[in-house]
Amino acid sequence: MNTLHLASELRATIDRWRAAGDTVALVPTMGNLHDGHLALVAKARELATRVVVTIFVNPLQFGPNEDFGRYPRTLPDDQAKLQAAGVDLVWAPPVEEVYVNGYPPATTITVLPIADALEGAFRPGFFTGVATVVAILFASVRPDIAVFGEKDWQQLQIIRRMVDDLRFGIRIVGHPTARAADGLALSSRNQYLSTADRARAPQIHAALQAVAHGLQAGRRDFAALCAEQSAELAAAGFKPQYLEVRAPSLAQPEADDREFVVLVAALLGTTRLIDNLPVSLC
View (cartoon, rainbow, N blue to C red):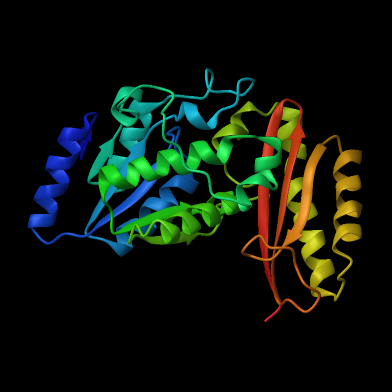
C-alpha cells in the first residue's frame, strides 16, 4: 500500500492502473478510522480492482466554533488499518494540494434545496464544504465508484444529486450504518463522550426505533410522533436539534408513502450526535 501526498503522484498512479484496465473505487474519509470506515473499504474491495482511501480533514466544512483544531489526526494508525484491509493507495494531501489556488477557494458547490434543511439549518455552509471537497476528490482520483456511509444520510443524498447534476459519471454506493453492540452509530466523535454520556448515548438510536415502530403501526402524525421522542431524549439529558421523518430523498413525507427515513441530531454533553434509520413498509 502506498501513501501519497501530491496530486501529481496520485494522477500518475491512477493513469498506470487505467492503462492496465483496472477499475477504481474511492472511499473519502477525514481519517481517525473506525470499523464503520473499514466496512466501506470492504465494500469498495468487492466493487473494483483498486481501492483508494483519501484522508483529508477538510477545513471548508467546519464552522468557526466547531472542532477543526481538535479533530483527531491519526495517520499512522489509519495507515496500519488500511494496510490490513487491503487498500491499494492512501491519498493524504495537505490543504494546498486540495485547494490549489489558495484557501478559501473562490469556487464552491452548493446543492439546493436539500443542503439548507436538517444539518444545513444547524451548520450553515457545512454541505457547501462537503460538496466542494468531494467534487475535488472526484476530479483528482477519477474513480468509477465511490462508497459512502448511510449514517450521513443527508450528505449521501447531496452527493448523489451533485454527481447527477454535474454528470460526473461515478457510481455512488451507500453502505448501511455500522453500529456498536448497544446500537450507537460508530463515529469518530464518539470518543469525545464522557463515560456517563457514552452509557446514555444509545438512547438516540432507541428514539429512532420508537419512531420507526410508530410508522410501522400506521401512525402518520409525523410531527407529533417525533415530538414525543424528542421529549424523551430531552428528559434523558440530550438537547435535540431535530428529529424528523422524511422520504428517502429528503422530501417531506406523504401519508401513503411506504419508504421513510427518520433523522436526528442532538447534543449530549458537548458532543453532537447524528443518526438516522431507514424504514420500509414494503
